[in-house]
Amino acid sequence: MAGYHDDKDQLLRRLRRVEGQIRGLQRMVDTDTYCIDILTQVSAATKALQSVALNLLDAHLSHCVQDAIANGGGEADEKVAEASQAIARLMRA
Image 1 (cartoon, rainbow, N blue to C red):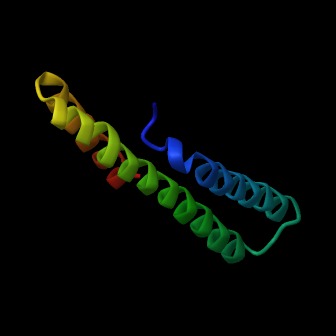
Image 2 (tube, helix red, strand yellow; image 1 turned 30 degrees about the horizontal axis):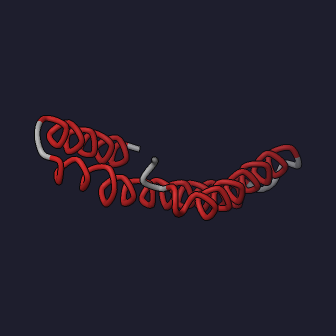
């Protein structure tokens, strides 16, 4: 089971909200809204997606990685490396 299973409804609500923000951005561009106003909304959508990513990362660490460490062996090393790579990707974004 996915580590975010218990928070799935909350994550889906957040993603739907981001989807609405993106549709709003499309409307803003379509109606020639002032550039700075669009950039402000892009920043808000970006922060919302980053929040989703951090929640998913937290769930991964507290469920998947924690379980792998408790079980020991090579899987623990793989999960820690996987989490490190995910953090690195988030930092580059």
